[in-house]
Length: 520
Image (cartoon, rainbow, N blue to C red; front, side, top):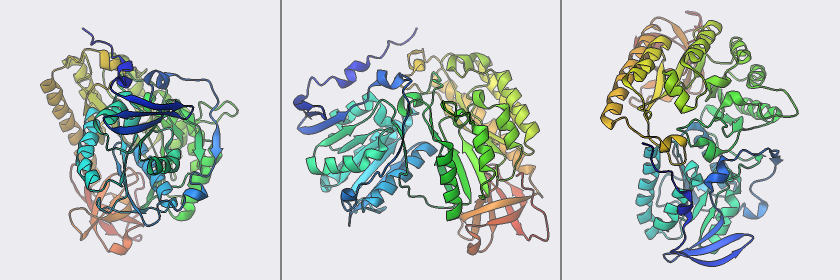
């Protein structure tokens, strides 16, 4: 029996609130003594609509001159939850804060502004954020002038915003994924008004270029598109990130060239569904395969991408990836389930057979290709036999690693009203079996590398041993080896001597001793 359909209108039931003012700039209300200025609020029905309106590309300054001194002498902290897209958004948020004069700190007591950049994809991510807010409430009492904000995907959900307004009145600022570029103006509004400021656009925004970013390390993320139009039945992302919008090729290429000039060694192209890139262009024919072909011509050692949807992974892209060069041999290809019946209920729009055929094409075209994936266990109605289909697919593909999850319903998705009829103990047992299978394949893959020489980008000291260096291969495998600290930031060739489950060990070889096996 299906659950009762959620009534989203109740999330903005302000029966206990007093409306103080209302005009074209929003409304100001009072809840439990806290004044809240709602410039715009999330609307679930609006966020599901896909409009035919043109998406404008704007080249504007996000931090006007009059706001560039507002944070002088002040400090910020940004806590990031969730995926690489959230990490990338945090880089933009930090870039704007620093243009406003704020400096980074790790000391909460020193911070003048703390922002939580949130994830909505799983229930435990939401629980973590509300737990964090509980801790920060005490800090806010000690330091009432500190600004506390919540942004990211959770902010796009009506129930979350309402819960914060009703139960967490000490929060000063709520903004969504479509209006990150509005942050400087929202900070000014919150500082001047002393009210909680809420601005969440449900309609996806325009593409804003030239936003400042604070990037650190050797690797950089480059957003190539926003949003997702796939509407998998378990996923809230199309509602929190909006419809698919691709950045113009010239802007992506210019950004990657600039990162190459700055000395970055590795670029990851980001999108909720990167291989749908370009499908929304009306004036040019230019696909993700075309973009990757252009990436090959840029002088940067490694280019990778995430995340791709099997349905949009076309033959042209496979052909381009087969050219190698700086295009690495690691492909993250989420399957979610090995059962065609479950894939259909999930709305994935491919079958087990189609997925396996795609894997065959990739492995045939890209020597040494390493595949990783995402898998959900315990989806509503999943039988033992359907889970066995997932286990057999894992064995057939031989994934090197996987993000594995127990299904949890997200309000606002079609799956949330399905009967969640797989008992939790069954879900946990399936997850353990799946993880053991993934570990087996990971270990086997690493064992196969013994004696091979691989190219490693040296990232820093090992977390557990300062005398050991750690780096990544082209296929994103973690390698530990002994070496001088001055190697950090460069490439070395390492001969693999030992295989662990989640990393490999090796020793540095000189160029004259061995030729690198660049496909590892």
